[in-house]
Image (cartoon, rainbow, N blue to C red; front, side, top):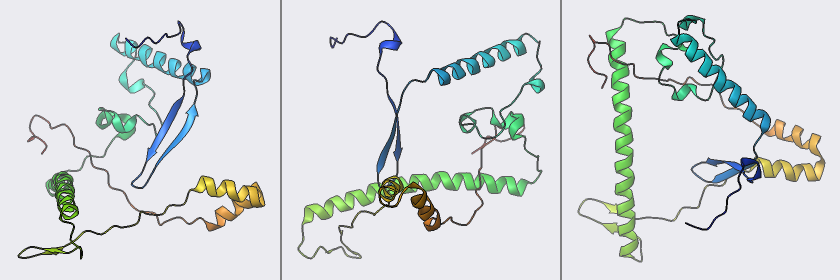
Length: 209
């Protein structure tokens, strides 16, 4: 349709992969990442192992308990639908209806919070748009119960560690730059992170809210 002529083989295609990292203040691109024969070979060997293991289990030649599982963190673990039954994440059962209800309430409250945050953002956007159209000299507007206005707030300043390290390296050398950045780097206190996932209800259970 567009008159584009593509090469006959993938080796003739110039490909670049980029990772786009987004935050509330900026977007940064990391790359480029070019096709890598070693990584491609690793992916193919992994796919072959998965396929052959699956076929062996289906044929009864290998038991599920004999399958090797990934140790440590793996990027796919958070997206896997079978984490609840995976040997890597075996959980200790607790019989506590009160705790189970507390977890259900927490899940519901978090879902409600997400909905409320969206509604708040929508309302604030509508009111800000109204203030811009009103164009009062003082900026203040009032209703029978509220006074309100909008104000232009400067964007948040952030420090680019990569650019700072490059500038310091040019001035004082790589070793001194690393030592200086290490001394100036602080680490926050460790904290506990609660992770809750909903289990598939058993036949005797009520549907998970």
